[in-house]
Structures are given as structure tokens and as C-alpha cells.
Image (tube, rainbow, N blue to C red; front, side, top):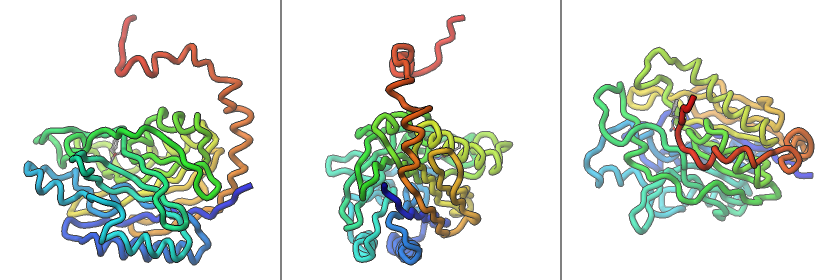
Length: 308
Ligand code: ING
């Protein structure tokens, strides 16, 4: 029976002018706070090291590439890995990855408590658009700057827990959780950067977005009998608001911890992973209840086909 105190390290805003080193110092402060509370895993947001740069149209790819990391760990992040190792705390965080052969991904890594990277995930569901859109209040150019992830949805047995990763928009798609649930996942970590307002539909405010974020995370947890940690980068970045709402959810879908601010804020939850077993062996015993002979449309068809 494995128990673990999990910490969600919500980050407040990071401005375009802020350095990686400044952000890493904030991340280390949250790491030390987590360690003092007995946490042995810290979950950081998507694109944790920089501002949410897909909001900016940059025609010059040399400028775009300044937002990417060519190796991990690297000079700026090594202090974080070393401090995590010294404190015996595993970490997961998102960053923009530029591979040696020139591919751009929205990536997340997971370490063990010795600071060794044990898993990598590249964001599969990329929202937004790939060309400058003059009709938007701000851009959301993830489809321009990133390629869809090429690693699939995987799990790793890390510190005795079956862990999986997803990133931001992935949390809105039930396929994400089910692909992990079919591998026995017990904890899904999901960092996010979610604009507090809709660039196209200003009527959709923060309250509705917070509701949709919690709904998605709670449903994914309950329907796959897993813990889920959804952790935000939040606050006003160069005049553009990101919503907070970081939460840790248990396998029944109940919220165990919730951030109250839009700043650097630590939330923690004591997780008993034996709580996953009941759902996985009863209502969500996939082997006993699923009828895959009727699910073919889910992987054979991408968009809607109305034939009635
Ligand atoms: N951001 C947003 C997210 O999925 C979004 C984009 C916001 C899509 C609101 C739909 C509604 O949370 C990222 N980075 O994926």
C-alpha cells in the first residue's frame, strides 16, 4: 500500500522579460516549501520556465527558438534538479523542447526522487491556430510553434506509483485519461496555462473556464479510478490573464486541495493509492465491463459525420 504526499506548485505569472534563472529560483522556493510539508513529488505547470509565448506572433523562427530548451537538464534548470535530488523529492514540469534534429514539442518530464528523468511526454492535443489571426484579442499559436506529440500516452512506475503525464488541453479529452487508465494509471499529472478569457468569445469568462477545467479533471479521475493533479501557471503575463484553479483530485473525483490565488502557491494532498483499487475492481473494472466491439468509431473517425 503506497501513500505519498503530493504537492502542486502553482506558478504565478512569468513576464516575457523574466529569465529562466528567475523562474527556477521561484520553483526551488516552492520545492523547499513542499519538502518541509513532507511532499515527495512536486507537480509544476506547463511551459513552467517561460511566459506563455504562444500568445505572441513571431515570424522569425530564431526568435521563436529562444523560448525552447535544447537539453534537459541544462544550465538554467540544473539547480532545480540538484535541489530536488538533495531533498529527495521527485518533480514534473513542462517546457518547450527543441530536439537535436529540429523538432519543436510542448513537453513534460518526470523524475524520481534522485533527480533522474524517468519519463517524458509531448503534448498531443494542441489547441489554437497556426497562422496570425487578426480577429483575436491575443494569439494562441500552439499549432504553429509545436508539433503534435510523438510519444503517445505512457505510464511509468515511479516511487511505487503508476504515473502518467498529460499537458493542458489534453485534460479536456477523455481519450487522454482512458489511454492511461488502460495502463493502470494511479496518478495523472497535468500542468496547464489557460487564458482566463476566450480570445474569440469574450463572453466566456473565468468562472466558466474554471468550471470546465475542474469538470474535466474530476471526470478523468473518477472514470479511470486515478488521482489527478491539475496545476496552473496563473496571473497577468504582460497584460494577458491566465486562470488559476490548480487542484488535486482523488479517484472518486473529489477535490482534495485547491489553490486560492493566482500567484506562486503550494497545495498538498496526502494520497493513499490503495484508494484506486476499489474503482478499478468494481465499476471501472475495464476487463469486465467495456465493450470494445462497439467503440471502433473512436479511433477510426476523427471528426463528426452526420448521416441522419
Ligand atoms: N490552453 C487552453 C486549455 O486547453 C483552451 C486552451 C482554453 C482551450 C479554453 C479551450 C478552452 O486549457 C492550453 N495551453 O492548452
